[in-house]
Length: 323
Length: 300
Image (cartoon, rainbow over all chains, first blue to last red; front, side):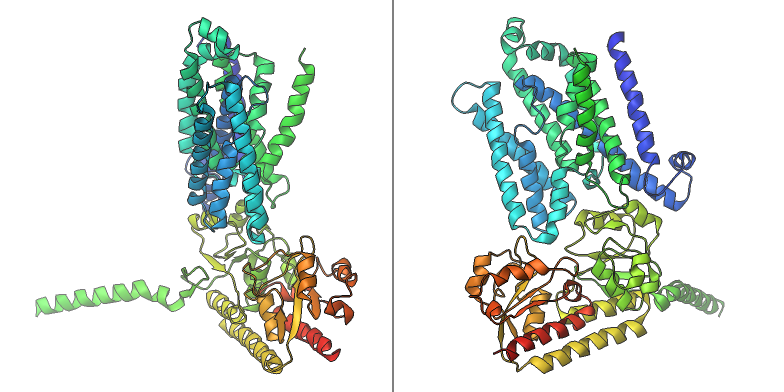
């Protein structure tokens, strides 16, 4: 990677590290930075070890992975659909995942089964949109977008129906899931691995993506095989989103705004934007989750609320300043 | 001889080792089965209890172990002393950090109220979770007894459980031959919600010789329409409320003089804290409930 591309990434990586250090060092129980360091080196009291190693660190890494996945998925969707309003959920994937998760919760299941059910719902929704958009006629991004939006509306109706008929005591859990909450996350490693792999896979394709972002005609004229590339983006973005939603419910806003923010600052070069999205999305969610844990502790906020509250003014400011 | 003696020594050593190994655990260890069917055993009676629902807090106090409670959740407002205990957030989303910091040796979960994945996380951290969900009067007593066993406060706990059991039995005897009264119990106003016969409040209605007009509905806490209430034509309407206030909840029925309950002015308020938690306070709530239905009978 060339030098001018490397510098912003290094800055973002440093910001990520800072966000993580802050997140691991902050909580409703105070653990000093020195004590955190001691725990990471294998010392510290039992209580501190449990707090840092079993509660905070996995949660921070999960938040990072989720935010990164969503931001990369959002950036890919925006390239694929050539629509600035596209986000990872625009094609109904989060709706499918939500129906899966809520069904599991209604059945009184917890933990792994809710995640599994959410993942199944996300895949089902992806296949449905994929199949329907393909249909019998020609395939275009606008057809994919319309199919996805309508399927999403359908899922929305099912979700409302489920909320309306659910027993009152199950509602809070369901609402938290719908608002997005990292405390559902279990092991962060599969998601982190996926994020890393996808970044490795996508960066070499950056040039083709750059051309595609300008329009399929131009891309085809320049020798990019458009259709396979578009399908690949769709499948990758869906996989990323499904993994993120499975970990932490449908956290809004990160996937929509992080790519736009980075484009406003760094320009629209996918070779830079995609890895930058992974870092910036991760950092944003780590910060947001830290706030969600401590703002009104011991009460816990869903992180989706914080991402929007943080992201909206930042984005509006950048938009206002640009040009 | 030498061989015999060495064998004996070995046997003695092994036996002592086994006894020595087992004795401390056996002497003090306490076990109880929770409402999910899980058997919870503690090496010694619990000394630091975290109660993850307002109802659990009351029950632990009833079991005589109130002074061992180190963590509660929001709205744990009874008894008065519970208000001074550290809160670990709402029962729907707990602050696990704070919970761990308080180092409880027993966590009382709520089967349908606490998020299952959080209870699982607490178990994964190595804390014993005893999940409760009393659905009958007997279950209230039984829960108090089990909590008393786990906390090593059997004397106080079993006495309180028995007091509640006897009290309910007495109310039951008093009203078992009472004239039936068709009753509508309003749990919530918007949306309008009631309870079926499976609900503990539904059981209070039956206990008092009332007939729950929505008792046969399938859901525990059904949402119903005002029309359905008018159609069911209850002879008495009893309502809980938000906090201890509910002026509007009952006045809405005054517009419908066609309802028997309105025509006879049988619109009564029951403080929700006395019947809506499965705790010994239900005895007081039940007595009040039964008195209201008796007043309604007197207006015939």
